[in-house]
Length: 420
Ligand code: DSN
Image (cartoon, rainbow, N blue to C red):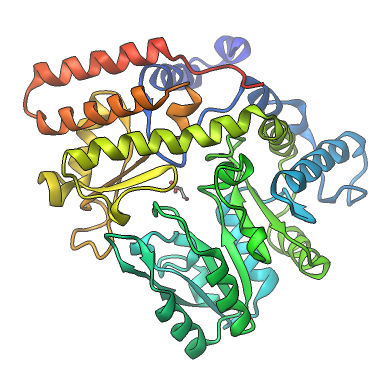
């Protein structure tokens, strides 16, 4: 690895080697991160990076596409099988691009989207005012009825939908730990004549691994996703259409040429490899273990009396109110845990009174440690170590002991090279 960079560019090599070490010796608890296989990395660093392939398999703008067509068709077919979709577009460079292309596919400027409030778990691309999409489209909100149970206020959602007549009812989140009632979303969308769309970026792997319900079974029209979170593929995005060819055509046109230029064929080949891994029976075991490990961490936090948004977790992530429960801000907690080799992110909690750069909460999850092979026992121990570090933040000896135990755990559970 890095033979050529090693000879040619010591400065970049230093950054890569440092990151290798950081990932090997520390625990990754950011719930949107994961470790890909060496096969995925090989595809992503492959010769396909040299190729321009505007268009889609069989209808490209440039010549020389025999092998790019092969790679993209494999990615499409595997994605369709994984999610039970009739159509897949694997070209979005990211989840944000997938969402933005989708808005341009389905909406006219000025149209309305009903999405989850960012402060209650939604994502920036679901219409946060800092994003440019809000200059083109109108976003209205739904929230949780009670942040301590996580239940969405479906009555309010229906009322907002009736008042604002959105063209898209958008489910999905990036900081929400409970299952959504998919049937309710679809029925509210139908009632107001909107498309039902869900951004499954965080839970795509749980769905592909059959550990969570598939929103298409409830009749959602479209799913958008990233490919690098629980799905454990390369960094990228994807859009899936359940049934409608008309929608699929609009989506294809919006992704290219509407929004993006040449697809990243090396990444698309890596998507195909990772989808192949996710179709392997072992992926179902992995997906289920993600949930069990999150439950094990939840138990430790519950026993310690730490408030968790949604009252706990039904998926891969936990959002803990460390400011309310332990008197530490999210930023302080992130820094203390970083110093002992645990990476997670500070996060606003519902209706947070603190600022986004120093909020009340932390968000953490189990996709990456589960890839490392952690079971409930190790996951519970990690939760205990987190609390030990946070409670003893002024005690350098205690922090050093936690750091050592994290290093030992990492050495016992090295990042695997392959999963099949
Ligand atoms: N940054 C991703 C996450 O952490 O959830 C979403 O964009």
